[in-house]
Image (tube, rainbow, N blue to C red; front, top):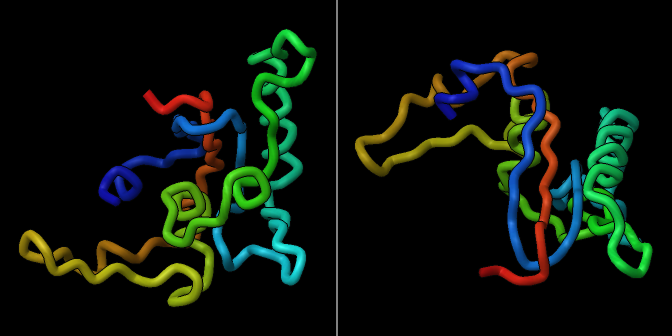
Length: 138
């Protein structure tokens, strides 16, 4: 939280393991179309897809000619996660509160000032790519 209060992140990549995927917003249940279960388009979908295609091309293809990293939204390629860092980093300052993003009220370690969990609308707007690097996790 403090990093986001002090810096203006515009883009980030988070690396995980367990599958091979290059994904982007949305990745939370509040942006799932019902009944089909697919993701809605994020406001920056055109830019997200264009950048993802460049990243995908840079990673190349496997021996069979398929992209090393298939791509799509986090919801469509991985699964939706409420409270995930990726969607929070993208939309915490402009998604409605308390739904889907509620103000944090921590009580551990002496608590945390509630006013430091509110942000101006332009503060937290980082396009985030979740890259699942490989099927193996270790």
